[in-house]
Image 1: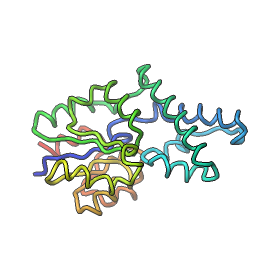
Image 2: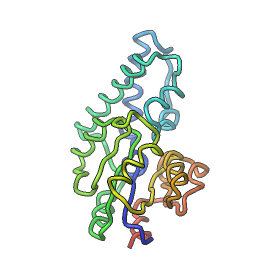
Image 3: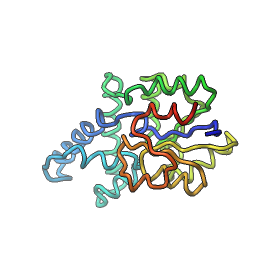
Length: 216
């Protein structure tokens, strides 16, 4: 590809969230049970990871729409704190070879940006844990834009960094962003989205190292 600006999603694209999100969700749910908000039950990982890539309001609307905004903010904050602690304790993990791929792309002259449906403090913890500032020219967590959809955040990025982009992600949010802006997209099949979600993608990759074949 001749495009030199790469717009990455984070969870499910660079970061394997299964190490920290399901445990944090279960801890939060246990607290909801103790508070009388939810009935006791067990959760399979795949029941939890289906929400990866969602912004917070959409996740809570799908998971438990009966909660008040104050409750979703409180319990969402619990998940965030549990995950941040896990990151600081060294529990987070990027997909294998992620840092080597990002370094190779940087050396090849690509400008890289992160657009994630996450909270700002969550992304900040990852920036510190993995030294992500070495690779990326800009970080755009959805919380800093009122959890707007990625399609509404992208114009801010484009204003700051004019030029063509390719979108790299694992969920339908990334594909919708690409489609609405007529951008090429690369779908990450190793993440948390289905093949149907990635149907718009020009290319689908099964390993992050495949990016080095697409961006020589």
